Length: 99
Image 1: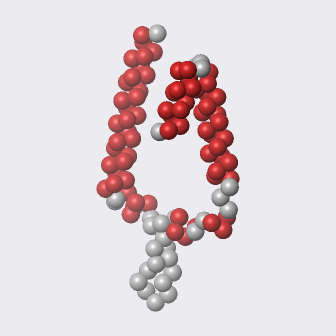
Image 2 (image 1 turned 135 degrees about the vertical axis):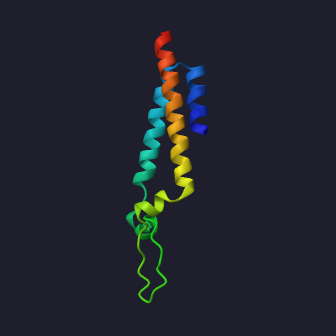
Image 3 (image 1 turned 180 degrees about the vertical axis):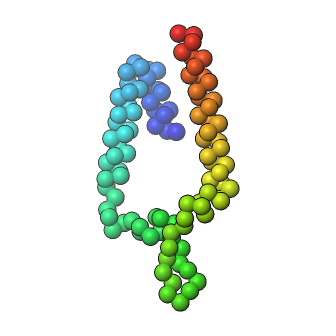
């Protein structure tokens, strides 16, 4: 949110070209941050959503796709993103027709 505000202020006070320059700088900052993560800092088992079983061997296993799709929060997120996409498509069509 701060980066969007900063990009908007740069575009308003300098020129619209600065909107794109600022987004390029923010993307480079994100790339540098992602590349700075060391391999040893990542717990790959936990990152894949694995949980330890209640058995004697206690080997963790990752959740399956069906288990993820049963989660109501994931379904609500998918519905919200779909509606957001459809709303933007309608606005894009309206914008294109007026120009």
